[in-house]
Amino acid sequence: MNINGIIFDWDGTLGKTLHMWLKGYHRGAKNQGLSFDDAQIVADFFYEHDKGQTKYPHIDFTRLVNDAYGHLQEQLPNLELYETATQTLEKLNETGTKMALVTSSPRNLLFQGMGRHDVEKYFSSIITGDESKAHKPHPAPFLETLEKTGMSAEETLIIGDAKTDIFAGKAAGMKTCVFAPAENALFHSFEDLAKTGADFTIEKLFELVELV
View 1: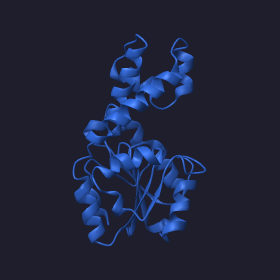
View 2 (view 1 turned 120 degrees about the vertical axis):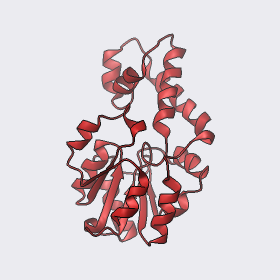
View 3 (view 1 turned 60 degrees about the vertical axis):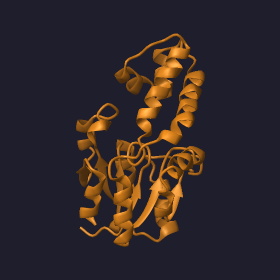
């Protein structure tokens, strides 16, 4: 299987921001005199705010999200990358693999996090959530990346931690890879991710080097 390019997700794939968002939502809930366990926070607040607002009509969701966002901004100087992330990017760069990044995060948050580890230099294209006309699982940001970089869909691999990454990659005609490290088990059902039909599943980022 010939792979000449890789498009990365950021949150939950390169940057360990999911754990920061979790603590941020806990802080936001506490500020409203509420307490939830980790699983409740992820299930009800992480991805579909409209459903959470219906389930908890007494919660000020605007305030909750703003508090979580504020926590993330405060903690970005302490952001960690997933194990071997930098080494993986460096090795792929050495082999001549083209690399790009597509994220739903806004540019200011992304670059604050990336800047701490000096990894933005590895990507020939970066599309953020506040720049894209459509968000994953829509394939638009991936198709735009192909146009900007000259990558071909047939030889490009999408790697992400969520179903939306895989669905978007498939819709764009690309190969797909689920990133499923043990520390992400709280945030995703690995069983559900397996049902997406991704071409590959890896637990360590350095496994990408063996795929190209």
